[in-house]
Image (cartoon, rainbow, N blue to C red; front, side, top):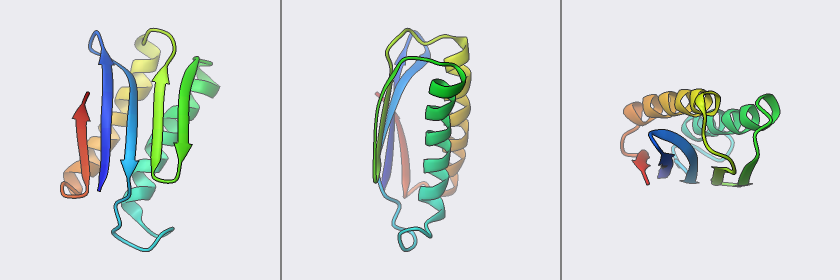
Length: 103
């Protein structure tokens, strides 16, 4: 199971964690894991490379943790809420495999 926890501050997303594996197919062929990874890693890249935001993150197989060092703003929120929209759609399709929480 993949668990995604969003950390919010003043109704804006300030960070998130993703843990686990979907285990719906062999490693490297799991579309659920691939979708979650693509969305979360793209958000990480957008925050760092495009917006040049200061972030703390840790990325390992099956785990991704990200936290904004500065206050979330409209631009960070646009990236992170867009990511959450995509993750919510995956969770709707695979409700027993992807769980999303606010933390």
